[in-house]
Image 1 (cartoon, rainbow, N blue to C red):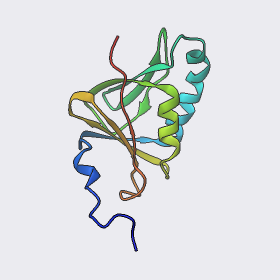
Image 2: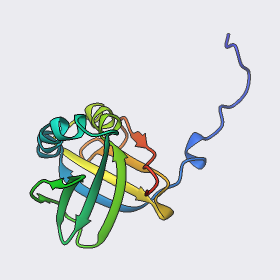
Image 3: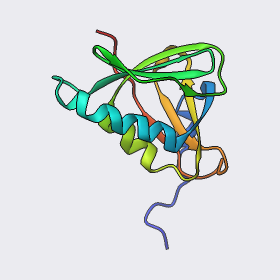
Image 4: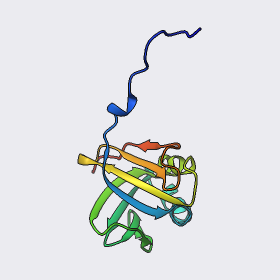
Length: 130
């Protein structure tokens, strides 16, 4: 028998659906994040900015920024995240192509594989702007 004799609540009803979906190469993104690790490790916190604009993602930290990573999104989105938490979130997603979802109001970022829509989804709460 089961320990709980009831239906489990639909957890997806509590998680905001992404308003914006952006596809990026996971390995290129992880390579760029590993290049930022040294610069961020010298800073007081591990805050980086993800800047999506005109089909490119730029990752910035303090005074430095990397070259644009190609995406399929022509709009503008900017979110600050913790570098370590971001890398951990990405490592759980299978496949080469990564879909990044942003909820309205920037309250949650979702990561999932393009090829495995029903697979593992990881979530990250962005940092507030300072």
